[in-house]
Image 1 (cartoon, rainbow, N blue to C red):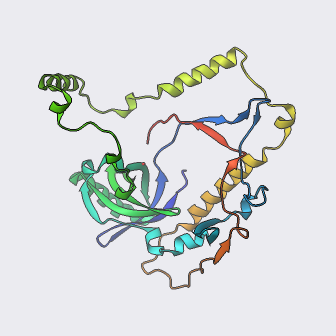
Image 2 (image 1 turned 180 degrees about the horizontal axis):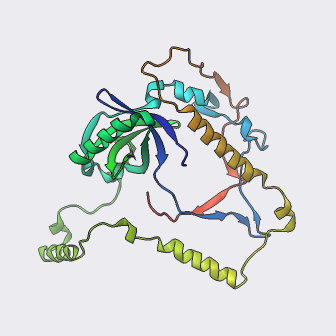
Image 3 (image 1 turned 120 degrees about the vertical axis):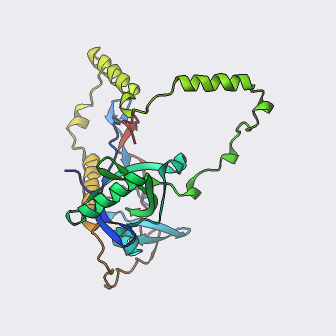
Length: 311
């Protein structure tokens, strides 16, 4: 069973649907390990304190926002949620629009919305209404530490949450050297336009995403298989191979802890937010007192992007 990324409600009008959010994409990436070409030992990312030059354990790392040069405000997971409890637990649909009218530049990645037991009827109602009207519900959602614009759309039996970018996140195309829209000034003739249109019409087909496959990853795997067959395999030195992969296990442990924390801490908000006093935000700390989270050369993996896909 997939692990829920977020748990809360989807609301339209007075209807509140308790839901869980699940990843809607599965990236088929080829896992590549960085190696030292002198002896083929793994090389990765280390967490280095920029003041002391020493590696920092995961449990000693906190998140900080630079308030002034060299001064940071430290934020805990509780702070991120306490900033706006209602926004972090609910997706309130603000408008219904034609999904086709959404600028494709705004589309980021998809997620599945699954109803909790008490919300199946309302879930089915919203799904069927969106399907029949061809509309998408536009709202906002807080995932982990940031808010996203989002569209709720119906797809077969599911409601899909499509994360969108805010308009101010897009780069201005005026900075690019693009050809003008007056084709005559560019020397494009009406005959050339007509020929191009006929070419497009002759290639029109029903969109079937399943027929498009990742040839690059397939061919790369074939190349790797040929190298293995030819004996082009480099072994890690015995000392490095015998040594425990401590940095790697630390990364996995952190990912597991973060996932568990997120899944366990995202519960549906009650009708009225609790009046308990939220945890006071941490005070400002100077750079010498609180290490700023960052990465420099040390332990990790590089990925060759080969998508099956995706927002």
